[in-house]
Length: 566
Image (cartoon, rainbow, N blue to C red):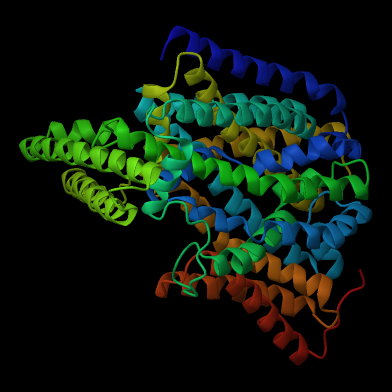
């Protein structure tokens, strides 16, 4: 990177840490540290909610998926607006008026301490691991693309985030999230502008999108009813609804965001902000991938975007085979470029060459390029033994570092850091809250002072930050990033949602039914994930239904037990 780009990245990191540290003035008591004394405006909470979900995995993984497959990933968010309306009417006012610190406190009031403990343990386990993945994903990619040391890259992302989260609590998390969202949006906008500006003079935006559409990349909705297909209209609407209900309604990293709002109405507005603005933003991010696909139709891409694996293959005994493959790739790229130019001309003129014939020629040429890349990927797997290798995660960082103007490279790298840090900070803060409130204050030190709990909270934040960095160092074998994080979350989310459905919507549910129902839900999801090819979004539905079904069955049989009062 150019010196100016380094200056932008360093300036961003210094700015974020300084701003986070200065927010510590309002964190001298437990409620201030964990909930900002319930004083934050709705728009700041809303931006924090969006920033928490929009991790670097979204920014890097979704653009890569858009490059490879198009806009289909947008279907993941179809259930989001419905979920936000449901939560705004139900759980937001309920949690806010209950004056809880964590979502799991209510489970003890409704059922018993072991149900609360189990739910909170599941949260701690899932979030600690996912936090490590959220650090690892951009760190692995940036270390390869930029030639940085992996461990130092992980620490470069993790240490500043841990520092301001430890000192500033939720105030620091929220207000740095606001600034990080501004950086992310600026970075996304800059990438779109550069991609549009670098279209060939003879290809308009409409023609470029038509070319991408010829390969199916502009198809955002797939109405196929196939439970084994990851992204369809139905999996996004139904499975995505259950995923979003659980994530925003039962996951402490999100619940804690809207518990900091000034009032119930402002908490609702913060969630509705995501309902209105999240989908357009999520549409724009894979669109960057589609535009990169068009860009690389006219500017030759590398056979492999992952430089590290490229170097390993070149240094192997099969280097000669790889060089021949590169020559084939260059010839196939040139044929595809000519076919894309002809397709744009056919669409523009509507004359001699029928667009359908030009489309067929382009698809054939694109298929040949894809086939060579597929052979290169298989070669990497054979040479390195990395069976999980996938190249799509490296497309966007490679484009940024090789094709973006000086200065904007630093902005995009800062945006990737911002996306990672915003999610990490929220998760560390929520991990600390659940640990201290659900376990330490309840089981070990029940009557200590706020100063004591604050000191413990900061130490616990540092501990979870260390755990996340250690997990990140070992979490290097990742597939498509957006799938990894959502597949992992879907293993837990449905079951957690199920126990809250029992708590809030089933008056006859008993504590024994809730506890064993939660365990049964996790077991059923594990079996489905292990022995079927069902897409992960449906795991959220399976987990919820299993918990509610088993929980209600046990409750009906358990006549000697009755639900506790709320």
